[in-house]
Length: 142
Length: 142
DNA sequence: ACGAACTAGTTCAATACCGTACCATCTGAG
DNA sequence: CTCAGATGGTACGGTATTGAACTAGTTCGT
Image 1 (cartoon, chains in turn red, blue, cyan, yellow):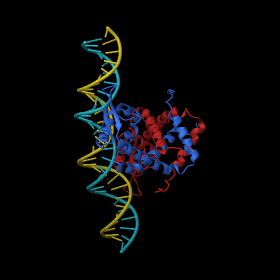
Image 2 (image 1 turned 120 degrees about the vertical axis):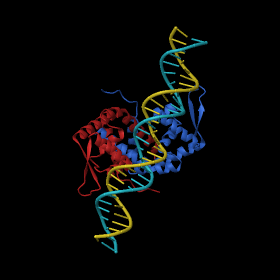
Image 3 (image 1 turned 135 degrees about the horizontal axis):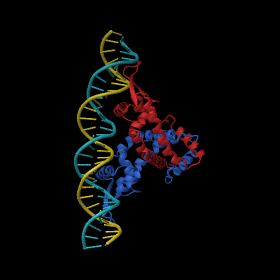
Image 4 (image 1 turned 60 degrees about the vertical axis):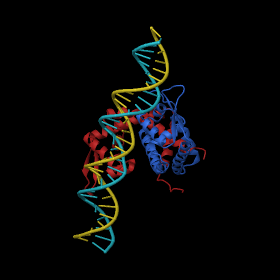
């Protein structure tokens, strides 16, 4: 292969870290810690703590904490799931949706500052490639 | 724009998180915590703690801890910088270089499992685009 | 040659994080 | 049914992380 995968990974990681760091102050203004933001942004797609833990690759115990904080801040609430009484269905409040959208907006704005340097076609390319990379993981070759 | 920057960021972040998580066990086998690995991999480029903190976007206090651990494990040592006696020049030991290369190899292997699903041309494209994105940050538009 | 202001790195106390043990509910085999 | 084994979520306690204060060394203006 002509491309060093480790370097590619590191490069990419640096990019995301810098962008996230750059908008962490704005997230804080919205009353969100970085980790809490991830949870808030994912709840609509994965409305149960166990799902969140899997999707975000964080421990269940941590999800408990972030959800507790987000509930305390009025961004979401827990509801008992009728079909399975063990589950807590997480529901965003209106405030939560506003905060989430603003937070995503801040992230987008910051990332756009970077994306603005490349041509539109490359954005589409990047999206297409990343989507392909996130397809279900192939079998290990070893 | 036709591409949602926030979604793109999130997508990408998820990808990197999954890949890193997948090889964290291998890193552990090498005697490396994830954060320590980042430091180990960056030392050759940024041989001073302050530089590491800036490059990796982590607090100075954390660098102190990771360097302490890496020194204790025999992966690097501190030397006093002749030109500036406040500075600690960090030098990789042979063991450290071996561990770093193996760790990067593990990361590459894991990322390659993903990259293998896309055509070679897209790898090159991805690299080109990411490199462009990491160019010095443009001025804020606001 | 002095000291104020600065930078490199560390320490320490406080907080964040999360492995593990736990309880409640669910599922399904007998 | 009923119990054993899963699964969802939380609580507790120990480790990891880090902001703030600190020490050491440097720089520069006078």
